Image 1 (cartoon, rainbow, N blue to C red):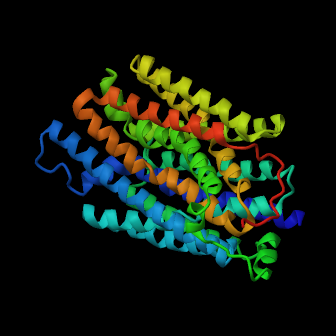
Image 2: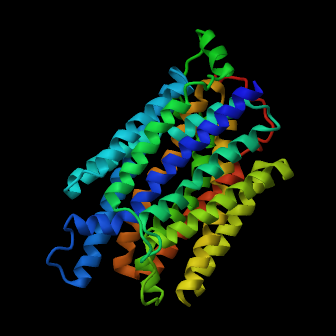
Image 3: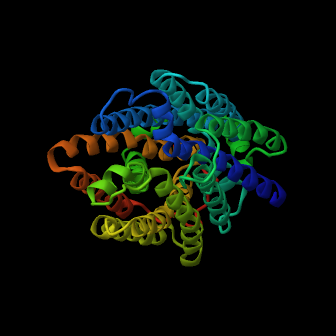
Length: 417
């Protein structure tokens, strides 16, 4: 079992690495790809800025919408057909879509393939974390999920280097960058052949009376629904930091008074560098404290503190801004413990459904966050709009965390009624 668990951790970590690479690559190449597709043709500078923002939000919303749909589909399949089937199927679809992303010539075709890529990406993390959680012992599974999520997040750093985080330094074209992601996904399929399925899943399958992968069962029991909503709320600030504060760093940075404005690709590079370190730190803190809730609460407080610095002194200089991006990534690194906690809160017959849908509902909330940001910008300005949206996610996260029970070391071998 130890060998099986180790292999599962390695393969799940590499799968999440590829997942994050693509997810963040779009943020890196958003401007360059849209410019090449002619979004700013014959437009004045101000009109071009608006067009890039509007089309960027459109594509992000398509991608995250795909992840929302994919999270439900892959999650249910994970509980009905097994964790491994999702790990294979999701990476296959993602790889095809990623290669196709490099071949688009219109914004609409770009949007379609971002949607399909989002569907493919949605299954990877949840299936991997579920499998690792079920293969490892109660005391050690937190270490396994920490390695998966924290190493996987480093895919964002690679995406930054390849996607042009540092202007003036050679990097491949945005099309080639997508081809690289698709190639990595295809290569990963070969590594998954020797991975073992979860024994808990097989045991549940043998119990014919147990219903598996019923997504709608999450809404038929009040206690289960509140647990589900609470853990989703806990993750919202993470994707506010990534999907709003740093993805639109150019607009917000300009609003803070920076000229030239920050490069979103560089901002995300430093953010994901911080996420890698923060992911390990939060996971290890959780093991040390023997508490998921205390580790989550600590890093949520750090996220709030870094955001306060972001809006108060982020406009001092680009150096200060990018330094804050790094610490913002580190503080929001609690994604690692967040996903592991989701797996620990529900029974085996619904675990993959929950662990796959929860992160994708959080990421799928990005369209609501970006649309709220865009809507508020017209009335209260870019900076105040970003502050308002960020504050809202933090309030919901605190409410969610306060209602959750501690899940460290709980026995996972049970089914939801």
